[in-house]
Amino acid sequence: MTTHSATLREHIEEMIAVGELKPGQHLDETELATRFGVSRTPIRETLIQLASMGLVVIRPRRGAIVAELGPQQLVEMFEVMSELEATCGRLAARRMTPEEQTALLAAHQACQEALDAQEPDTYYYKNEIFHEAIYAGSHNQFLIEQTRALYRRLRPYRRLQLRVRNRLANSYNEHDGVVQAIIDGDGDRAAQLLREHVMIQGQRFSDLMASLPQLRQDAA
Image (cartoon, rainbow, N blue to C red):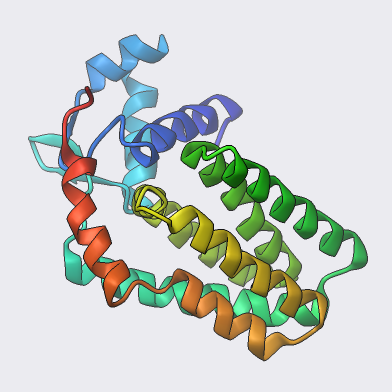
């Protein structure tokens, strides 16, 4: 993959994650080509890459749309995500270097600053860095790749969750426990806390389902 095509993929992936391109929305190749100042060929190649990641669905003779997830799919994917993150946390508690622990603490502090400022979008990006620090600390490249791939697939929905009332504060408090468990080298506790942090069930599931229409509304 060239640097240019990787950048193009990242741009469109980000537009999907932040809801600029919404679930079910048709992706017009000509429109996207004009927007990014490229021909339709790299756009088409990028959409194929995004389809392989599950973010886009390409329909024969009808073009591409942003993928939509139903409630059952969402629950199943978050279930797997929670187990992947739990495994990352368990391994990170055993394997993180002092430098990696320092990076984790810095990411945690950055989340606190975004929380204090009540900036959900800033918190979302700092939260990604926090979770990435845990993945890296697992020192298992295959696990890191699988976890990142599913994280990307769920990005629009994880972002939406942070807009639910009190979720920022709850998320930060959950991070606090995870950090302590990892620093203490308590892999089982880190795994359990991360599993609970990521899993959507009960009230969190209801809140996410209630928020989904926001993801599908046209941008104001």
